[in-house]
Image 1 (cartoon, one colour):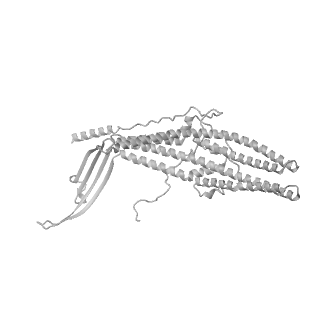
Image 2 (tube, rainbow, N blue to C red; image 1 turned 45 degrees about the horizontal axis):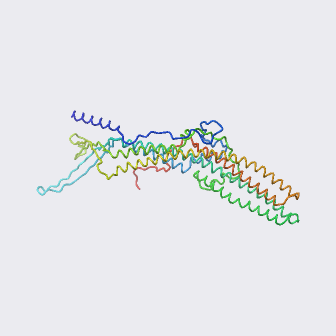
Length: 485
């Protein structure tokens, strides 16, 4: 007996030592290849971006409230939270494969044996049984450990995806809010211009009746009013679409924003541009890059899982049971039985299925690697594009502001010359049309400038930095134990 126990302990020690073995590639995180500097230089020296709650520096309390509400109620965020919970559950599930399993069983039967021909006596009796069955797969080549490793990377990828969803949400809320405000301002401008043009048309008709203006001038004035008023429905439709999209982002019905955003209010005031850190630092803060890198790590671990399936597997199984014709007999030494021993499974022929599974895992790892490289390049592109767009839109807005100043003066002078009979009414119409077009373009540019600011903050990785609770399920089941249906 002592020799048997010694052999068993030595065998278990050997198995435990072999359990540290692993097949497949070991993943090593490598920093993404990034240029040393941006192609569009900054006037200030690069420093760490101040991106925490960047939208609060726009000075719009309504926007701040909408973003906080969106983080709480957005359906995409809720879905990303559920994905995090699923990944965490998968990790716990995979971890269970590293531990032994233990099952208990109990049974009781009463049986009757038909009478034998010799005796003619039937026998009726009871049989009770109770026991435990245990099993433990020795992770000889690290397949189960690789599965746990892959599941752990999956948790980190899901958490990065949640951060990416929050980043996208904050940017989308800010963009649609600015668009909605801009369309309301443009509608208000169109109505004011149309009112002014209508007054001009009424005056022109009065002059035509008095013989000091022609019917052609009156018709042209009415046509210009109609043209301006015709733009209002288009702007209203675009405004409604932005507000509907904003409501959906907040998890509300499409029409929920109409009253909350009623009235023409100024656009959020632009804050100082978020400074750009070095490209490598920006990439480190981008959740989509982080998610892609963790997905690569996960697919690398899956290669090890597929490789381990090509090697033998060893399991330890054991059971202990007790039998008796009476309940009191259970547990007595004379009624106990047990068994213990290892089993080995060696893959011999599977029609190349195991080799194909390993090749599939490697191909999927290549896909993840290329997706990671693509995420890096896309992140760099986002920052470069947003930087150029913001700088150029700022220049455009300045030139448009100058155009509006000159167009306003031209409209004033053309009206003065017309009133004094020194110019034709067509000059007045052209000047007013030019002024209206310039003011519309300036408003559009102001909206675009704020939108480009939002895009740059988003490209730099700025999002929701506060903790987000991903542990609470959306659907509460209540009691799920045994119950009558």
